[in-house]
Length: 313
Image: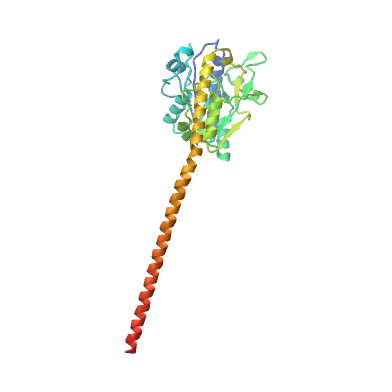
């Protein structure tokens, strides 16, 4: 099995309110560690970065760089985005679909780290349960241990892995695993990362289009440093915009479902007419076959009579 894991790296300063300056290197390291662990069990994992040109320098060598993102909140909603240049989720998924041949695609926030055995566990879940999509909710862990800020150093990574079990459960959805053929059917329109309710909207879309979908609330597979909610402090207009787009996505989904419910009546009528037509054709064939059999019997009888008459003479 081949797995593609994509995220959107973002170059930021130490003062970033979402703690990304410190969290992203830990995320990158955790993904690399998990990739190497999976390789030992012959599970192919490709790590992808979908980013803007200015973010190139922070991307590790173990990541495959996708073509640069073209859309953002700045290009689509310049009046409300301010300095924020947030990526469009559907564009990230479409690029991963186009440039990878993976059986399953994983999309996570850039501040979501993974356990060492993450890809091994994902592979086991898929093989055991045959899920076409599933979500793994994270655990929030402390940013510091004994007053020391946790970083991507090897000794700190081991501390982080051990902290996950005792971490706090989080209801947010930020780790999505889906079969590649679902990507083109998701259609999140212009929803962007950074503000809710994109996670829940993607969850609802997958639950609708996926044959077998599941939400794992907590299984110690992913983590997040701290429990900051930076989106609550700033950017209410962007939050409102994402909520509006979410409504459009979900309304469109409901309208399609209504049409599907209305269609069966017409389809049933059409199918019954076809069935009736087939029955009539079958009955006609039977009658024709019966007539042929009768004609053959008559011919045989006539032949026998003739033969008898000849014998008498």
